[in-house]
Every structure is written in C-alpha cells, then in structure tokens.
Amino acid sequence: MAGSSNPQFIQACSATTAASGVICFLSVIFHLLIMIWAIPEIKSDNYDSDYKWSTLVILIVQFVGIILGTVAPLFRCLASLSFKLTFKSVFNHLKVFKVEKYWTQKLHDLKYGGISLSFGSHTLKVVNKNLRNLALNICIILQVLVVVVCKIIALNFFLLTQFLRCLAWPIQALFCSSVESNETVEQRKFVLQLEDENELAVTILKGLSKSFNQLLKKSEKKQPENLMNLITKRSTKDFQGVKKLYDDNDQPDCWSLAVVTLTTIAVTLPNIEKGEVKSLLKSVREGLIYITHVEENPNATDDYKSVQKAAKTLWEDVDFRHTWLEIRLKDIASRGNTPPQIVQLFLDNAKSKKNIEGEGRTSITICANSMYHIAQSIIDYKESHTKLFDELSSRIADIMAACLTNLPQVIAMKVHTSVIEKREASVKAAAQLLGETKEIIKTLQDPSRHVPHIAPNDLPLIDKWCACLGDPESYPFRMH
Image 1 (cartoon, rainbow, N blue to C red):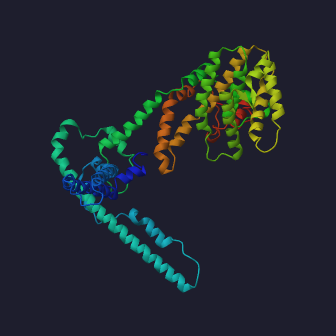
Image 2 (image 1 turned 135 degrees about the vertical axis):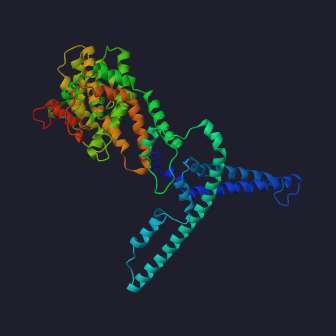
Image 3 (image 1 turned 180 degrees about the vertical axis):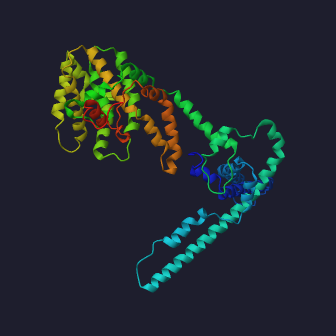
C-alpha cells in the first residue's frame, strides 16, 4: 500500500509524465539526426561559425546533456509497460478527451472558494471577482488542453509499446508466466491507485513485496546480540528493576535517563572484569537506540523533552568522556573502597547539584535528581562490587525489557502514519525495526513474563509502570 501510494510512483504512471518522456525521446532522435548531418561538415573544416573547431565539442556536450536529461523521463515513461494489458486499460487510454477531476480540482477550489479582497467599493469587488474568475477559467482551459495533448501523445506511445509486446509475446511466454497466484490476487486488494488507472501487473506486485521482504531479511541479520543476551540472562520475569525505582514515591519519567544513571554507577565500580563492563556498555548502546523509538511522541510536553535531552547528553558524557556532570568516573572509583562509599560519593555530588538553579542548568538538575533517588535506593547495599554490578545490570535489563515491550505498538504506529509523503519511508523504518527486534519481541511476549495490565496509552510511560508495580493494589489496573 505504501509503495503504490507513493506520489512519485503515481506521477510516473500519469499521462503528463509519459508525454514528457516521449517528447524527450523524440528530441534525442532529432538531435541525433542533426549530429549525423553536422559532424561530416565539421570534419571537412566547413565550420561556418566563429567557434570553428570548438563547434564539434559544443555539439557533443549538448548531446550528452540531452541524453542525461532524457534518462529519468524515459524510464518513467516506460512505467506504462509495467501495467497489465486488459480491455479496460486499452479502453481507458482511448478516452483521451476525458479529463479527470483531480487535474483541475485545485483550480476549481480557488475559483469557488478562493480568498476575495475586501477593499474598495462594491463595483471594484465585482470587477476583481470577475477578473479572477476569468483568469482561473483560462488556467482551467489551458490545463485541460495540456492534459488532452499529453494523453494523445501517451496514447501513441501506449499503442506502439503494446504492438511491440504482442510481437514479442511468443518469446515472452516461453520464459515467464502471467498466471496469478492466490497470494498475488490477495495482494492486489491492498494496491492504492487513482480512479480509472491501469491494473498493476503481477511483476510490479511481486517487486513491491520482494523489496519489503529483502529489507526484512537484511534487518534480521542485524539483531542486537548484546542487548538480547542482557535481557535473557539478567532480566526478571516480573520486572523487579522497574519496581525498585518506585522508592520514595518519586518515579523517573524517562526510560533512557534511568538506564543511563544506573549504567553510570555500574561502570564506575572497581574490580569488575573489563569484558563484563564492555558487554554492559554495548548492551546499553544497542538498547538506547530502541528506547528512543519508544520515547518518541509528537504530543510530548516540554518537560518530557527536556528529560530526554538530558539523558542523551548524559549518555554521551558517560560513554565517550567517562564523566558524570563533569566529574571523572575514575576519580569517584579511586575515592571509594566499598560499594556504599562509591554510591555515597554519587549521592553527595547529586545532592549538591540537584537544587542548582539558573539559566542553562536544567539538564544538570534533571540528571542530579535522577542520580540522587537511584543512589538512595542502593545506598544500603553491603555486598561486594561484583554483586552490586550484577544487581545494577539486572535493574538495567528489567528497565530496558519493560520499555521494549512497547515495540509492537511502536511498529504499528510507524506503519499507520497518515502523512502520505512519509508513508513509504515510515513503513520501511517499521520493517527494519521489526527485523532487528524480532527475537526480542518474541522473548518479551513470553506468557511467563508478568507484564502489568496498563492502558495501552500508558504503557510507554515509565511512571505508570512504577506506580503499578510499586503499589499494584491501589492502582486501578491489576496484573495479569
């Protein structure tokens, strides 16, 4: 549907495009005849021009320019060959003097519903309206004439191509079959076309379907393996990591900020194998890409966008510069010998920064508040660095898993975009996202996982998850 409703695809099938292709092709033939006639004269030094020998160069450059300018119109013109030859299609082409409404609809709208100028006397208004209608009538007549002429030119091209097709039919029948399968007949129901247009051939339907399937298979080869391993090995069935964010009745309102804050503490812990730290960072990098898709919301408030922006900036500092709010993570790790000491350092720094006010400090305040509440939830953790790293990894996996349960809804929203110019690109993006996250979606849809029964519009919001998991009895929705 998205491919057949693409404006470029429809334009390639119109009479004006076919006529422009024929005209360009005829201009090439005409210029080729001129070249055949002129080159021998030029070679005989009979220039008859002040440009002399450069005349040949000018002709060649012009000819190359005409060839290049004809490629696109000619290929669009040949799009008519992709249509199935039926009695209806021939009959529609023969109706050259019938101009469909969509050719002149905009001009008629301007004529009967256009803006009228409110100045001068009543007589001037009448004169202005009559002149405007006269100009629009002339434009409508010219538009009709242009369309009719283009249809006549396209008709000649159509008859010629169909004649050549009939001559080549015995050879074509040996190599290809025109029998439609049940799958093709089913696909034809979803093709969007202008009224009275030709019927799309089987090859076009197969081409549209093939391009989608190729994109899907190509995307399936780009599965986020690190993210998948983290969710499979570390996440819990009932998303305990999200539930623990509910402490002090203060829920973060952005998935990515919670993930980045927990990752900051995890990668700061000393005495952790470098392989595990790198694996966690790779998993978070992959996960944040898909979390961004979930958090995209055209109706998001300014506060929500500010939190998203702060999370993005914080992640760049942690991942690229190994700092948190301009504090080096190595400095924090060197000053803390035990997990509570490291968490306390984060807590103290966050406490000193979370109430900072002033222009340009909003991002710092948001990040500091997130760190303050998350650090408070693990300040009493007395186990070793390795145990705390495992605990933080589990929380990160739970938060990302909970967020990514919204992927089917996100994919459906991308498919159902209403902007026609962006529809095909959006469908391709949805196909790519589906291919890359196919295994993750399958894993998260396992019946053993206790996904809270929240309203569909609230599922992408982390604060709704925290409220439901933290206090399910008082929440209006119950667990499965």
